[in-house]
View 1 (cartoon, rainbow over the protein chains, first blue to last red):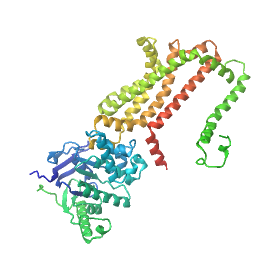
View 2: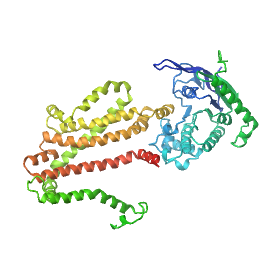
View 3: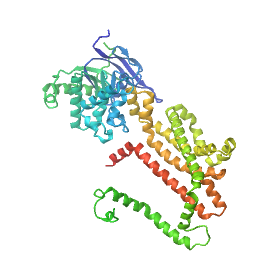
View 4: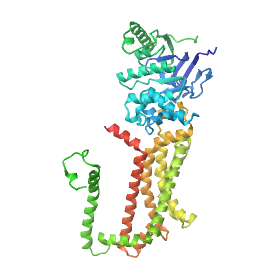
Amino acid sequence: MPDRSTLLRVEHLRKVYEPTTGSVEAIGDVTFTMDAGELVCIVGPSGCGKTTLLKCLAGLLRPTSGVVEMDGAKVTGPSPAMAVVFQEYGRSLYPWLTVRGNVELPLRHKKLSRADRDRLVADALETVGLAHAARSHPWQLSGGMQQRVAIARAIAYQPEVLIMDEPFAAVDAQTRADLEDLVRELHTSRKISVLFVTHDIDESVYLGQRVLVLSASPTWVQEDLAIDLPPERDQITTRALPRFTQLRTHVYGEIQRAKRGQAAAPRSAP
Amino acid sequence: MTADTGRTASTPRQRGVGSRIAASFRYALGLPMLLLVVWGLVGTNETSGFFPDPLTISEAFVDTWVGPAFVEDVLPSLYRLGLGVAASIVLGIAAGTVIGLAHWLRELLEPLLEFLRAIPPPVLIPVVMLLLGITDTMKVVVIVSGAVWPILLNTIEGVRATDSVMTETAHSFRVSWWERLWFLVLPAASPRIMAGVRQALSVALILMVISEMFASSAGLGYRIAYFQRNYLIAEMWSGILLLGLVGVFLAVAFGFVERRVLRWYHGIKEVNRA
């Protein structure tokens, strides 16, 4: 069954929180696979457990049952093949370190020579367009630039897959468009796989090669939609395509269905 | 620089750094100068002898402290103070970090720590004296027994309050335990730790003096008590003045270190205010 090109395999993932007030089933039964080099967006109604799902994938939370496999190996904790970009950049970057220091921190425990480490940091900062701000502190930068630092930190770590948790939810619309294009560019030029969680339907269609629509909690994958837009995308022409509008309308309808709980849960995954 | 520059109508930005420092000095020293003048006027007309005028005290200051007394009394006191503060910082941060990181340890120790902190350290002096004799170690132990608490409790609180997203970030990038301690936990707690150190400094100074008043044959506290018992009033006041100066020096040194260590913290506050 393990396919060489399958990067991430999630099977019957279930997560139940058990606070003292009684158990809450956050994730019901999530199953999907992701191939190497894919850009997959996960979208769902608010409160559908997107962040919980992502933490389970990244090895930050232990699922109640089910399997997460990365390159055929079971994920039991944070994996060196994954790098996470969190939504709250202000709380994810360390304000006492410079931009450079933040990008460098995850590389310290990798057995790299000083020169290799410096090269990775400089290269990552160059890629996100922040080479000039290496010696600044994160709080001296705008929100969009701070999120760029978080992205630089993730790519300097050289993961196989970039896991992004609503990374642009807190930045303004123009900055968001720039950052979306940055993610597209990282995906094409660096051949990096991206798993992008968002609540923004347009964003998911614009970015993704595939969009997974999640149901309301307890969550399962309601639809796995291939986005057949041309690989070369840009903010003006792509978003003006009739196909773009069709797709976003379709996803929008699915989300509405999910909210009303009309879609039927799967009895078992294929 | 001329004294006039401060009075021109120019904005602070346009004024030179030198004259700005001069202006702040004028503010800082203005009130003490005024008080000295008032004191001088009152002191010269006063006959009880308990409140000599500033000139007499400053003469006594030079006679008493400049010379061998500096080596015999002041330096040993400062040495014990420095040792006590350093030990309190090391002990407070080390123990505070361990307790702050371990949930069960915190629950176990919290009531005990609250109790120990509530004991006024001077009452421990006779006990410590019995155990350690009249030694430097005893005095340092007394200083630590009081100065360690604000650092310890602030460190526990600071370590415990490390942001969950920052911790998760460190986990997701598999940052090692030591790196997490050095690059996350301690810096995150540093504003609280520094607040603790600031309190510890004043407690340490008080305990330095008290420990020497109890049982000693040298030291600032001993000297001041000695002058007082022998009615050397001007000398006694000069010792109090010296203690005040030591306190001011500690505050300045602390401020210098604090600004460097917490540059990011003050920077964020400034950005948020703008």
